[in-house]
Length: 439
Image (cartoon, rainbow, N blue to C red; front, side, top):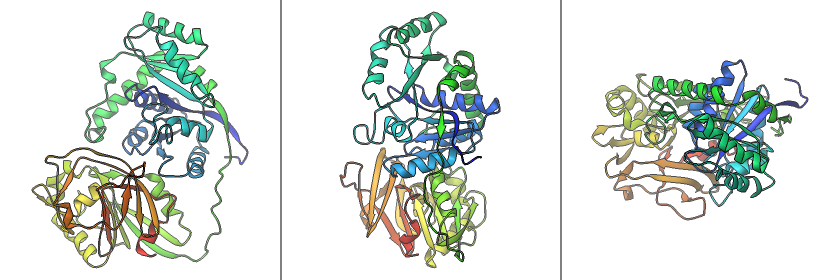
């Protein structure tokens, strides 16, 4: 790609509220455009690590998180620009309602759009509505006029005549209408478990195909893409001086159906580390017989509770991980990875590194951004789980952990020898995570 700036369609898909159809429209567009030969760069506003998997299935490309709580504006710009350099189209799926952030509109889809200077397409639920959508759209258009709202796509439209009524509302207030998605039972999101069900790939593939078909049937793709064209600047970050002779470091990363919640930016920054020549090797606690030889073991979050029998039955893997932990091996374990290191998850034996039991019984949702202070190291992350620990007072937190609004939370970050584990999914693409072990 030339160093010169270039022009491609780029936009944020936002909505008036959660459940309006952002994901349906996003993955439908990603699949349809990919099938037409475009290289699509997908992104997700916020900390979600499930929708990014759907984006990857739909587009065949890695989807990156753009999160203004867990990272700075400069980092978000750098992630976006570096990811879009060799793409034909960039599609950013928003989070919740357009102006919903962790504190008023901070961290919202609107703030991401302003940070990147991207235009916005607003998804509006047209069910049981007609001309009344005009003041709704007008409000989103004028509430913050620094937002470049380029147009609207309606969802849950019952017929062509219904769409004409909705389009008349757009015409009345001078807002582009690029089309609609029809009311269709096949466009209902597949069943959820801690979010979208990513295990039934056949079911999800059928859903993505249906989304693409619906988008292609009633959305004016050519007009939409033409309206969203804008220039992409060169990569902005200063990577600093590279050290010619670097020490080597091997990192083993668990990645399979049980452990899949990984921020790709975390792995990118490891591969680009200026102090170490880092190699990353993936392995499966479900199917491999032992963990690879490494300097650091990373156990990310996921769905271990769905694979308890398989994880428990893989005794050689559990033993190899416990041996690594007890022999001063450096380990980072998050959420599901942390649960895997407990004595048991309900009645199923796990690795037994931490003397505590994790359970799904009488559990409730724990959700929200987290700031973790570990000595002088400040980490950002996101907590999302239903499980709980039995008698959590057995473990003492090594971190002060607070919510997005600074309120202290009860979940902790724990340490056993060189094993560091907790429920927070950490985003360290702007933080030298190796400093947790003094490296």
